[in-house]
Length: 395
Image (cartoon, rainbow, N blue to C red; front, side, top):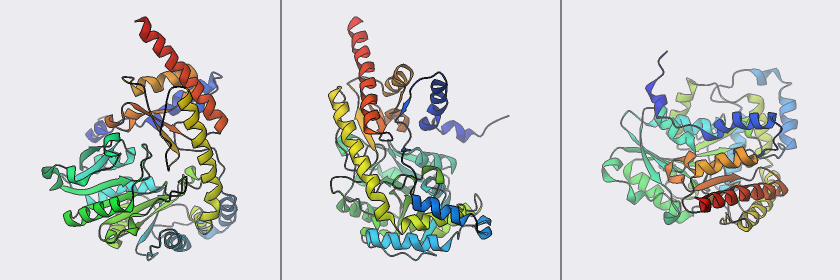
């Protein structure tokens, strides 16, 4: 049977690929330390578990939610956005519940791109951006994020010929995988640029609560004019330890919300209503719930940064996210290093090139296990480095 040509333009999804190999190693008795997917070992909030347990007893929660979903969840989202960012949204026209933020990010291109239209996609970046553009038949303008540019997309450096066809740009700060952050001055520049060129801004903000050392991540809606062009995507997955629950939302421009909802009407019938009821309970206590999670991630960050630096993998101390973006010694291929670390030492990390060729020379370490396990993982990575150096000298 012939497969669609568009599938040939989709790169491998690294986080999914390592699952089979990890399962094989575990079956062989290997002690695997998984620092791959951003899926921490914290339990979900107790308030979410209680709310879900109560909601599933209500037969109405087992009906179709469609795109309207659970209205109290929409209202809780609006309350959270106003408390957190002083940004008011109409819960019925400027908010849309999602089956995780990935759902909205990957389906947005279907709502705003026609064949030949260009989407500006940062690289390295979340694979859902490129996947959505390819599957929707759009054209990608890949923007390399590098240490030299602070891992920021500079709109002024988009080629003029591509800019004329641009209809969508993805931004993600705090950033996965680079951990870079952006301030309001930068966001204002991007918003003004999007408004002047008629470009939709998809602002992916799932790590806004995972910030450290007093840093507080902004919303794009703290910038004047953002409502003309922007949608902002959020999730309960990372900040609230609910990755498998698949509950998120998007808020912003009412016309764009309506367009995305129309696309999703033909693809899904919205998140399970009982899960939205659990999300309602979580968001109304978001500040209290996230504080101990944030503190634990900061402890893990500090332990991992120190341990990696001690074994010859110095890394900057990030101000946000649940990752470290670790530069490898000069000339070392990231895919080869990640494969050896997994096969020889039982440690899962994601090679930088899995996020696009601009990620080469780095590996992403997820802070998904305890400080003790992060230190052990660092020691194991050091052994691979030592063997690589010995082999290099021998040659």
